[in-house]
Image (cartoon, rainbow over all chains, first blue to last red; front, side, top):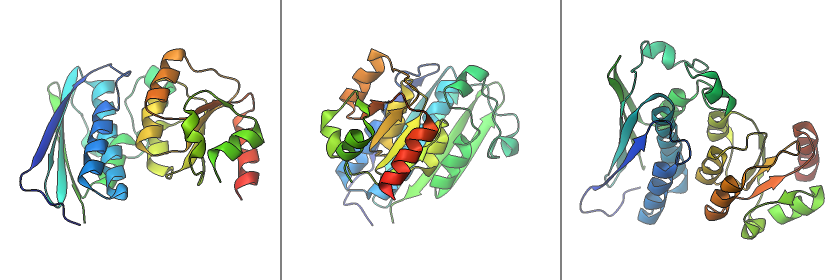
Length: 145
Length: 110
């Protein structure tokens, strides 16, 4: 499937660490945008799950961050950058079930160690770049076809 | 089956989104882990959970779920109900436990 676009459709959202109340707003707005553009529901679902998981990670772990998205005719690229603690062991963090979330976050039903695996599972390309003490950048590409 | 049929049959207390009663119910998913719900629930599922904080609304909305059943007589705050109303997410409550409500739904849907 290809969208009829002349230019890249871009947008961004700012995220504030600890702001659980507004969690999901970036993903919700992106969902609306993609449905408006005519992207298939099944693809929109993958984008929103991946984006929401990334959004939650920023809210849970980082002081602040941002979501940038770039929609092309045949794919979307989503970039999530944060000023957070960074990830010490990416291999471990990518394992389903591994989490460093504090207890109170787990009590909310987050921190099950499924966030990063869910992002990867729903992306065609997934890249994570992290520096301990500085922050983490995640880039995901999801194809429309 | 419509959400309306489920609400009536199991006597759920619908707290938000009257218009959601027209939602088609495709099944149900039971979990208190939000990422698990995002990974494994399907469009039109009823989500049975004891979680009742703000984020359940976004999870249900983003995943096109038919509604959320909060079990064990737990009552979500007004603030959460208000958000659910705005986002058109049906929140229902029941005094029944997860086991009981899942059993009732399983019988109805299969």
